[in-house]
Image (cartoon, rainbow, N blue to C red; front, side, top):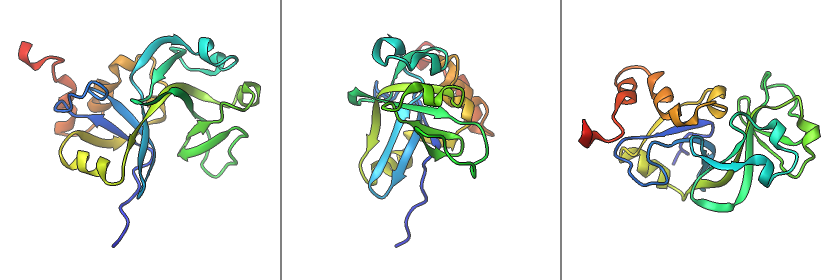
Length: 189
């Protein structure tokens, strides 16, 4: 049996039928996907908590808005950071950053922030993450809960995260772009 291709680095965009409050209108960046399951972070769930209140020294490196984002319903008491390091894939990764896909990578929050100052672009800090057991994500995609689309580096640092769901859909081709106009509450349409 041949292994399914990895979806790491792609975006999951919730379809309107996905009503779970953790994922309704969510845009999830997949940070890892293999035979053991998948892990990602919700890009469009900012919280009112400033990064400075939780991680001393990292706030100046956080993109606007410099708040903690809820990465998903799992391990909300933990933090992880994702950032873009511009440049070619073949360049050596800076100390304290591990490439996930393309220019997007994980930041080591145990490293001194000064090490990455001036290197990172568009850093986001997430409380918790989203996780799927083996085969669960593939089943959800097959059931029509998610659209799978390509990620752009700017998706990570979108200045208006509340508009990200519509923006990602709008840039797709064909019928998927029409979903960007889907009303928040179809019963009021």
